[in-house]
Image (cartoon, rainbow, N blue to C red):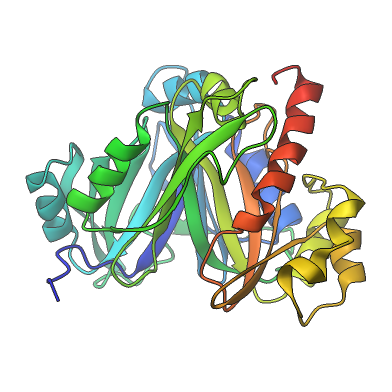
Amino acid sequence: MSQDFLPLNGTDYVELYVGNAKQSALYYQYAFGFELVAYAGPETGIKDRASYVLKQDKIRLVLTTPLHPEGEISAHIKKHGDGVKVLALWVDDAAKSWKETTSRGAESAQQPTSIKDEFGEAVLASIKTYGETIHTFVERKNYSGPFLPGYKARKSEYQATPIGLKYIDHCVGNVELGAMNRWVDFYENVMGFKLLITFDDEDISTEYSALMSKVVSNGNGYIKFPINEPAEGKKKSQIEEYLDFYQGPGVQHMAIATDDIIHTVAELRNRGVEFLVVPPAYYDDLLDRVGEIDEDIQPLKDLNILVDRDDEGYLLQIFTKPVQDRPTLFFEIIQRKGAKSFGKGNFKALFEAIEREQELRGNL
Protein backbone atom coordinates (compact mmCIF):
# COMPACT_ATOMS: atom_id res chain seq x y z
CA MET A 1 0.00 0.00 0.00
CA SER A 2 1.56 3.31 -1.03
CA GLN A 3 1.76 5.91 1.74
CA ASP A 4 -0.97 8.58 1.53
CA PHE A 5 1.12 11.75 1.20
CA LEU A 6 -1.99 13.94 1.66
CA PRO A 7 -4.07 12.50 4.52
CA LEU A 8 -7.38 14.39 4.77
CA ASN A 9 -9.70 14.34 7.77
CA GLY A 10 -12.66 15.70 5.81
CA THR A 11 -14.09 18.97 4.53
CA ASP A 12 -13.26 21.80 6.94
CA TYR A 13 -15.50 24.46 5.41
CA VAL A 14 -16.80 25.78 2.10
CA GLU A 15 -16.48 29.54 1.60
CA LEU A 16 -18.75 31.41 -0.77
CA TYR A 17 -18.13 34.94 -2.00
CA VAL A 18 -21.55 36.59 -2.08
CA GLY A 19 -22.95 40.05 -2.82
CA ASN A 20 -24.65 40.43 0.56
CA ALA A 21 -23.42 38.04 3.26
CA LYS A 22 -25.73 39.39 5.96
CA GLN A 23 -28.82 38.57 3.91
CA SER A 24 -27.39 35.29 2.54
CA ALA A 25 -26.61 34.17 6.11
CA LEU A 26 -30.24 34.66 7.11
CA TYR A 27 -31.37 32.67 4.04
CA TYR A 28 -29.20 29.68 4.98
CA GLN A 29 -30.31 29.90 8.61
CA TYR A 30 -34.00 30.09 7.76
CA ALA A 31 -34.22 27.88 4.66
CA PHE A 32 -31.49 25.29 5.34
CA GLY A 33 -31.47 25.30 9.13
CA PHE A 34 -27.87 26.40 9.62
CA GLU A 35 -26.85 28.07 12.89
CA LEU A 36 -24.73 31.23 12.95
CA VAL A 37 -21.64 30.45 15.06
CA ALA A 38 -18.95 33.03 14.21
CA TYR A 39 -18.35 36.33 12.46
CA ALA A 40 -15.42 38.41 11.22
CA GLY A 41 -15.66 41.99 10.02
CA PRO A 42 -15.02 45.61 11.01
CA GLU A 43 -16.15 44.90 14.59
CA THR A 44 -13.47 42.21 14.92
CA GLY A 45 -10.71 44.25 13.26
CA ILE A 46 -11.18 43.04 9.67
CA LYS A 47 -11.54 46.12 7.48
CA ASP A 48 -12.13 44.86 3.93
CA ARG A 49 -14.81 42.16 4.31
CA ALA A 50 -17.49 40.62 6.49
CA SER A 51 -17.73 36.84 6.93
CA TYR A 52 -20.47 34.80 8.59
CA VAL A 53 -19.79 31.20 9.65
CA LEU A 54 -22.79 28.86 9.58
CA LYS A 55 -22.83 25.34 10.98
CA GLN A 56 -25.07 22.27 10.93
CA ASP A 57 -23.68 18.99 12.27
CA LYS A 58 -20.34 18.55 10.42
CA ILE A 59 -21.00 21.19 7.73
CA ARG A 60 -19.52 24.67 7.90
CA LEU A 61 -20.37 27.34 5.33
CA VAL A 62 -18.55 30.67 5.33
CA LEU A 63 -20.31 33.54 3.54
CA THR A 64 -17.98 36.44 2.73
CA THR A 65 -18.84 39.81 1.24
CA PRO A 66 -16.51 42.72 0.35
CA LEU A 67 -16.89 46.11 2.02
CA HIS A 68 -15.33 48.07 -0.87
CA PRO A 69 -15.66 47.94 -4.67
CA GLU A 70 -11.96 47.26 -5.27
CA GLY A 71 -10.15 44.05 -4.47
CA GLU A 72 -10.27 40.37 -5.27
CA ILE A 73 -13.60 39.53 -3.59
CA SER A 74 -15.49 42.30 -5.44
CA ALA A 75 -13.89 41.25 -8.73
CA HIS A 76 -14.89 37.63 -8.09
CA ILE A 77 -18.53 38.56 -7.43
CA LYS A 78 -18.70 40.93 -10.41
CA LYS A 79 -17.45 38.18 -12.72
CA HIS A 80 -19.05 35.05 -11.26
CA GLY A 81 -21.96 36.24 -9.15
CA ASP A 82 -22.37 34.45 -5.82
CA GLY A 83 -20.22 31.33 -5.89
CA VAL A 84 -17.81 29.01 -4.12
CA LYS A 85 -14.29 30.34 -3.69
CA VAL A 86 -12.74 27.91 -1.18
CA LEU A 87 -13.12 24.15 -0.72
CA ALA A 88 -11.21 23.87 2.55
CA LEU A 89 -9.71 20.54 3.61
CA TRP A 90 -9.08 19.62 7.25
CA VAL A 91 -5.54 18.30 7.72
CA ASP A 92 -3.15 17.54 10.58
CA ASP A 93 -0.25 19.39 8.93
CA ALA A 94 -1.05 22.29 6.60
CA ALA A 95 2.59 23.11 5.78
CA LYS A 96 3.31 19.50 4.80
CA SER A 97 0.10 19.31 2.73
CA TRP A 98 1.09 22.48 0.87
CA LYS A 99 4.66 21.24 0.33
CA GLU A 100 3.57 17.80 -0.93
CA THR A 101 1.10 19.28 -3.43
CA THR A 102 3.19 22.20 -4.67
CA SER A 103 6.19 19.92 -5.14
CA ARG A 104 3.98 17.79 -7.40
CA GLY A 105 2.91 20.72 -9.54
CA ALA A 106 0.14 22.56 -7.68
CA GLU A 107 0.24 26.34 -7.98
CA SER A 108 0.36 28.02 -4.58
CA ALA A 109 -2.41 30.46 -3.65
CA GLN A 110 -1.12 31.08 -0.11
CA GLN A 111 2.04 29.87 1.58
CA PRO A 112 1.65 28.20 4.98
CA THR A 113 0.61 30.95 7.39
CA SER A 114 0.21 30.68 11.15
CA ILE A 115 -2.58 32.77 12.68
CA LYS A 116 -3.14 33.16 16.42
CA ASP A 117 -5.53 34.57 18.98
CA GLU A 118 -6.45 33.82 22.60
CA PHE A 119 -7.79 30.38 21.61
CA GLY A 120 -4.49 29.17 20.15
CA GLU A 121 -2.98 28.81 16.72
CA ALA A 122 -4.19 27.60 13.34
CA VAL A 123 -2.16 27.11 10.17
CA LEU A 124 -3.61 27.76 6.69
CA ALA A 125 -2.12 27.16 3.25
CA SER A 126 -3.83 27.19 -0.16
CA ILE A 127 -3.39 25.85 -3.69
CA LYS A 128 -5.23 26.74 -6.89
CA THR A 129 -7.56 24.38 -8.69
CA TYR A 130 -10.07 24.80 -11.59
CA GLY A 131 -11.17 28.35 -12.44
CA GLU A 132 -10.64 30.65 -9.46
CA THR A 133 -11.50 27.92 -6.94
CA ILE A 134 -8.88 27.14 -4.31
CA HIS A 135 -8.25 24.39 -1.77
CA THR A 136 -7.20 25.67 1.63
CA PHE A 137 -5.50 23.22 3.98
CA VAL A 138 -6.67 23.93 7.53
CA GLU A 139 -4.66 22.72 10.53
CA ARG A 140 -6.54 23.39 13.75
CA LYS A 141 -5.19 20.85 16.23
CA ASN A 142 -3.83 23.65 18.43
CA TYR A 143 -6.92 25.83 18.14
CA SER A 144 -10.08 25.83 20.29
CA GLY A 145 -11.93 28.97 19.17
CA PRO A 146 -15.32 29.20 17.47
CA PHE A 147 -13.87 28.99 13.93
CA LEU A 148 -10.45 30.50 13.17
CA PRO A 149 -8.36 33.37 14.57
CA GLY A 150 -9.88 36.69 13.53
CA TYR A 151 -13.43 35.37 14.02
CA LYS A 152 -15.55 35.97 17.11
CA ALA A 153 -18.36 33.74 18.34
CA ARG A 154 -21.69 35.14 17.14
CA LYS A 155 -25.24 34.01 17.73
CA SER A 156 -28.30 35.11 15.80
CA GLU A 157 -31.49 36.52 17.26
CA TYR A 158 -33.16 34.16 14.80
CA GLN A 159 -33.48 30.65 16.24
CA ALA A 160 -32.61 28.36 13.34
CA THR A 161 -34.17 24.89 13.33
CA PRO A 162 -31.81 22.23 11.91
CA ILE A 163 -33.32 19.98 9.23
CA GLY A 164 -31.05 16.94 9.47
CA LEU A 165 -28.17 17.96 7.20
CA LYS A 166 -25.13 15.91 8.31
CA TYR A 167 -22.00 16.42 6.21
CA ILE A 168 -20.84 17.25 2.69
CA ASP A 169 -21.06 14.08 0.61
CA HIS A 170 -19.33 15.50 -2.50
CA CYS A 171 -18.68 18.76 -4.35
CA VAL A 172 -18.96 18.90 -8.14
CA GLY A 173 -16.85 21.08 -10.43
CA ASN A 174 -17.77 22.17 -13.95
CA VAL A 175 -14.85 22.73 -16.33
CA GLU A 176 -14.62 23.70 -19.99
CA LEU A 177 -14.70 21.23 -22.89
CA GLY A 178 -11.46 19.23 -23.01
CA ALA A 179 -10.33 20.14 -19.47
CA MET A 180 -11.88 17.29 -17.46
CA ASN A 181 -9.02 14.83 -17.88
CA ARG A 182 -6.45 17.50 -17.05
CA TRP A 183 -8.14 18.15 -13.70
CA VAL A 184 -8.63 14.44 -13.02
CA ASP A 185 -4.87 14.07 -13.60
CA PHE A 186 -4.29 17.00 -11.21
CA TYR A 187 -6.23 15.30 -8.42
CA GLU A 188 -4.54 11.97 -9.08
CA ASN A 189 -0.95 13.19 -9.48
CA VAL A 190 -0.88 16.31 -7.29
CA MET A 191 -3.24 15.25 -4.51
CA GLY A 192 -2.98 11.46 -4.64
CA PHE A 193 -6.69 10.91 -5.31
CA LYS A 194 -7.97 7.85 -7.17
CA LEU A 195 -10.39 7.75 -10.09
CA LEU A 196 -13.58 6.31 -8.63
CA ILE A 197 -16.03 6.30 -11.52
CA THR A 198 -16.44 7.54 -15.10
CA PHE A 199 -19.60 8.61 -16.90
CA ASP A 200 -19.54 9.35 -20.62
CA ASP A 201 -22.07 10.94 -22.95
CA GLU A 202 -23.75 7.54 -23.40
CA ASP A 203 -24.54 7.56 -19.66
CA ILE A 204 -25.50 11.22 -19.31
CA SER A 205 -27.39 12.48 -22.31
CA THR A 206 -30.80 13.45 -23.60
CA GLU A 207 -32.01 14.14 -27.09
CA TYR A 208 -30.50 17.62 -26.87
CA SER A 209 -27.44 17.73 -24.65
CA ALA A 210 -24.80 15.65 -22.91
CA LEU A 211 -21.94 15.82 -20.47
CA MET A 212 -19.02 13.71 -19.35
CA SER A 213 -18.05 13.26 -15.75
CA LYS A 214 -15.31 11.58 -13.74
CA VAL A 215 -15.31 11.21 -9.97
CA VAL A 216 -12.08 11.35 -7.95
CA SER A 217 -11.80 10.44 -4.29
CA ASN A 218 -9.09 10.69 -1.65
CA GLY A 219 -7.68 7.62 0.12
CA ASN A 220 -10.20 7.32 2.95
CA GLY A 221 -13.14 8.34 0.75
CA TYR A 222 -14.03 11.36 2.90
CA ILE A 223 -13.50 13.75 -0.02
CA LYS A 224 -15.14 13.10 -3.40
CA PHE A 225 -14.96 15.52 -6.32
CA PRO A 226 -16.87 14.76 -9.51
CA ILE A 227 -15.55 16.85 -12.45
CA ASN A 228 -17.93 17.57 -15.36
CA GLU A 229 -17.29 18.86 -18.85
CA PRO A 230 -19.80 19.46 -21.67
CA ALA A 231 -20.11 16.96 -24.51
CA GLU A 232 -21.33 17.51 -28.04
CA GLY A 233 -25.11 17.81 -28.28
CA LYS A 234 -27.74 19.33 -30.54
CA LYS A 235 -28.32 22.19 -28.09
CA LYS A 236 -26.50 23.91 -25.24
CA SER A 237 -25.85 21.63 -22.27
CA GLN A 238 -26.37 22.64 -18.65
CA ILE A 239 -22.58 22.68 -18.24
CA GLU A 240 -22.19 25.21 -21.05
CA GLU A 241 -24.98 27.31 -19.54
CA TYR A 242 -23.14 27.24 -16.21
CA LEU A 243 -19.80 28.16 -17.81
CA ASP A 244 -21.45 31.06 -19.69
CA PHE A 245 -23.08 32.52 -16.59
CA TYR A 246 -20.25 31.76 -14.14
CA GLN A 247 -17.80 33.07 -16.73
CA GLY A 248 -15.59 30.01 -16.45
CA PRO A 249 -15.07 26.84 -14.41
CA GLY A 250 -16.31 26.58 -10.84
CA VAL A 251 -18.25 24.58 -8.27
CA GLN A 252 -21.59 23.48 -9.74
CA HIS A 253 -23.16 21.91 -6.69
CA MET A 254 -22.63 20.69 -3.16
CA ALA A 255 -24.23 17.39 -2.19
CA ILE A 256 -25.24 17.29 1.47
CA ALA A 257 -26.06 14.05 3.27
CA THR A 258 -29.09 13.42 5.47
CA ASP A 259 -30.33 10.35 7.35
CA ASP A 260 -33.98 11.20 6.64
CA ILE A 261 -34.41 12.74 3.22
CA ILE A 262 -38.22 12.85 3.47
CA HIS A 263 -38.04 15.03 6.59
CA THR A 264 -35.20 17.19 5.24
CA VAL A 265 -36.81 17.87 1.86
CA ALA A 266 -40.28 18.46 3.35
CA GLU A 267 -38.72 21.10 5.62
CA LEU A 268 -36.78 22.72 2.75
CA ARG A 269 -39.94 22.88 0.64
CA ASN A 270 -41.92 24.36 3.56
CA ARG A 271 -39.27 27.08 3.86
CA GLY A 272 -39.48 28.01 0.19
CA VAL A 273 -36.53 26.16 -1.34
CA GLU A 274 -37.32 25.22 -4.94
CA PHE A 275 -36.36 21.89 -6.52
CA LEU A 276 -36.10 20.50 -10.02
CA VAL A 277 -39.24 18.65 -11.06
CA VAL A 278 -39.32 15.20 -12.67
CA PRO A 279 -42.61 14.05 -14.25
CA PRO A 280 -44.97 11.82 -12.20
CA ALA A 281 -44.34 9.04 -14.76
CA TYR A 282 -40.84 8.64 -13.22
CA TYR A 283 -42.52 6.83 -10.29
CA ASP A 284 -44.70 4.47 -12.36
CA ASP A 285 -41.99 1.84 -12.77
CA LEU A 286 -39.72 2.92 -9.89
CA LEU A 287 -39.79 -0.39 -8.02
CA ASP A 288 -39.18 -2.33 -11.25
CA ARG A 289 -36.05 -0.23 -11.75
CA VAL A 290 -34.64 -0.13 -8.23
CA GLY A 291 -36.24 -3.10 -6.45
CA GLU A 292 -37.50 -3.08 -2.86
CA ILE A 293 -36.87 0.06 -0.79
CA ASP A 294 -37.72 0.91 2.83
CA GLU A 295 -39.66 4.07 1.97
CA ASP A 296 -43.26 4.38 0.77
CA ILE A 297 -43.45 5.59 -2.83
CA GLN A 298 -46.13 8.23 -2.17
CA PRO A 299 -44.08 10.66 -0.02
CA LEU A 300 -41.16 10.29 -2.46
CA LYS A 301 -43.51 11.14 -5.31
CA ASP A 302 -45.10 14.03 -3.38
CA LEU A 303 -41.66 15.51 -2.68
CA ASN A 304 -40.20 14.53 -6.10
CA ILE A 305 -37.31 12.55 -4.55
CA LEU A 306 -35.36 10.26 -6.93
CA VAL A 307 -34.07 6.75 -6.20
CA ASP A 308 -31.22 4.75 -7.73
CA ARG A 309 -29.53 1.45 -6.90
CA ASP A 310 -26.02 0.09 -7.33
CA ASP A 311 -24.33 -3.18 -6.29
CA GLU A 312 -24.06 -2.08 -2.67
CA GLY A 313 -27.47 -0.63 -1.97
CA TYR A 314 -29.59 2.31 -3.01
CA LEU A 315 -29.66 6.07 -2.61
CA LEU A 316 -32.29 8.80 -2.56
CA GLN A 317 -31.51 12.21 -4.01
CA ILE A 318 -32.99 15.52 -5.10
CA PHE A 319 -31.55 18.71 -6.60
CA THR A 320 -32.51 22.29 -5.80
CA LYS A 321 -32.89 24.89 -8.47
CA PRO A 322 -29.97 27.37 -8.50
CA VAL A 323 -29.84 29.28 -5.19
CA GLN A 324 -29.05 32.61 -6.84
CA ASP A 325 -30.40 34.34 -9.96
CA ARG A 326 -27.57 33.23 -12.22
CA PRO A 327 -28.16 29.57 -13.18
CA THR A 328 -24.96 28.43 -11.45
CA LEU A 329 -24.60 26.95 -7.93
CA PHE A 330 -27.23 24.55 -6.57
CA PHE A 331 -27.49 21.91 -3.84
CA GLU A 332 -28.15 18.20 -3.86
CA ILE A 333 -29.71 16.46 -0.86
CA ILE A 334 -28.68 12.79 -0.69
CA GLN A 335 -29.42 9.85 1.58
CA ARG A 336 -27.33 6.74 1.07
CA LYS A 337 -28.72 3.33 1.98
CA GLY A 338 -25.53 1.44 1.18
CA ALA A 339 -25.05 2.83 -2.34
CA LYS A 340 -21.64 4.34 -3.07
CA SER A 341 -22.56 5.70 -6.50
CA PHE A 342 -24.03 9.00 -7.71
CA GLY A 343 -27.46 8.22 -9.17
CA LYS A 344 -26.57 7.23 -12.71
CA GLY A 345 -30.07 5.83 -13.27
CA ASN A 346 -31.54 9.27 -12.61
CA PHE A 347 -29.32 11.25 -14.94
CA LYS A 348 -31.69 11.23 -17.89
CA ALA A 349 -34.72 12.32 -15.84
CA LEU A 350 -32.65 15.00 -14.14
CA PHE A 351 -31.22 16.31 -17.36
CA GLU A 352 -34.63 16.62 -18.90
CA ALA A 353 -35.75 18.52 -15.78
CA ILE A 354 -32.75 20.87 -16.10
CA GLU A 355 -33.43 21.35 -19.81
CA ARG A 356 -37.02 22.38 -19.06
CA GLU A 357 -35.62 25.06 -16.75
CA GLN A 358 -33.00 26.09 -19.33
CA GLU A 359 -35.73 26.47 -21.94
CA LEU A 360 -37.72 28.75 -19.63
CA ARG A 361 -34.57 30.88 -19.25
CA GLY A 362 -34.06 30.88 -23.03
CA ASN A 363 -30.67 29.17 -22.72
CA LEU A 364 -31.18 25.72 -24.25
